[in-house]
Length: 242
Image 1 (cartoon, rainbow, N blue to C red):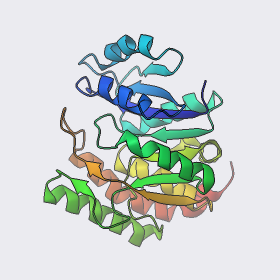
Image 2: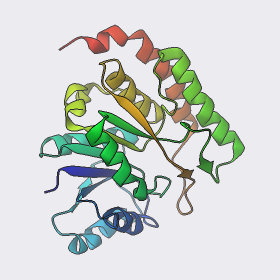
Image 3: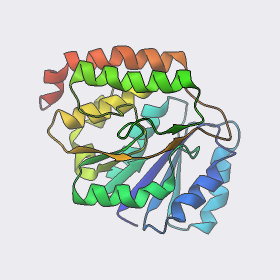
């Protein structure tokens, strides 16, 4: 078992899953990969099983009993990682919007100077490719809104390409994570930041998926808008030890 784990949640990613697995291992990093599948009806989980012979002892699959959303899939993966001896845990999408070639530099930053490293679309301007302008504006101003409400100095608060030191996940009381969509990503960063942990941003170019369909919907956006207020109003509560 390696000391770095890449968690990739999936729901109907049959077009991408074999390629993204190969791309992660092609980085040459000594990593394991965990796919957390949310009961995809398109055969994504079976394709992961088909790939396991090519990556023995390095590729793993957790099939959830029901579809519960992105946040729940990641929490499942984090708990799986904490039950093993992984020191660095990454989350990334299956659709190549997060380039696996960024993993070596993000991992190095995590080892050297960060507790949480964020693959950021907005640290140097707006680095998004093939998104409609309306979605770029929504995402960008969502992060501005988060900074305004919370005071958290992270320019891409909704980013989903993130690496954590093990100790961070051990502190965040994963059983109390409340949100499932964009708000989940904000919640994880916010709870780390208010504890004084080092959250840094690494510039990436985010490329919209070429295959498959986006899982974003209106309920996820509303959850993020109201979730930020919930997080700010409950700041002192989150800092209390159980």
